[in-house]
Image 1 (tube, rainbow over the protein chains, first blue to last red):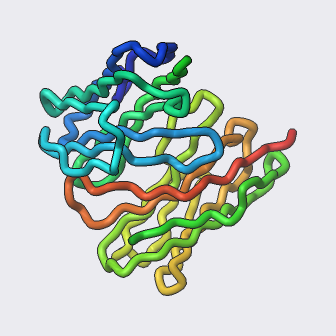
Image 2 (cartoon, each protein chain N blue to C red):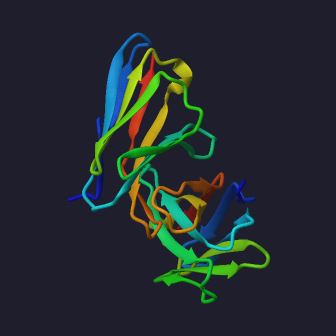
Length: 111
Length: 116
């Protein structure tokens, strides 16, 4: 069983669509993260949840809406996205020891 | 704010040879962790090695080892006996303390090519 899973792996959506990305961790971790990875750019941290509470929101536009219903699941709800939002979205989880383990990512294309 | 710098956008190495990837960081914290992650073409980020700042001994993990110079704020990765499967983007990352939910700060990455 892979530690951190993400679905879907690929997503193409129009600017008026609403979709959600899902992340699930099977590692017993208590923190989860969303990152955005665009071409030629470092990973950008979007949101951090610790013990199901959002502890960090890095000035992410409101068209991205995270949800963490429990310590194993993390969602990223998307609506009215822009073409520049096309990127690889990575989910990660960690324990207090610090290592973050990443999912395989969702490749998002906004048309 | 913490920053992580990888000054080598690209590196190449011959198969079976040794290569060193550089990373420097800036922090005023005394308690922190440093990591190297590997991202192959599959885009899956894989943890390669971890170093606790309070440990003087350099971390090793099979063919991967680090040279951690705390005073110089340097954290290089050495890959010995390079293999074709080592070809990937390598990211150096910093994490403050041991608090759940602490952010990772990543460098811009070094693209490693392994030549047969």
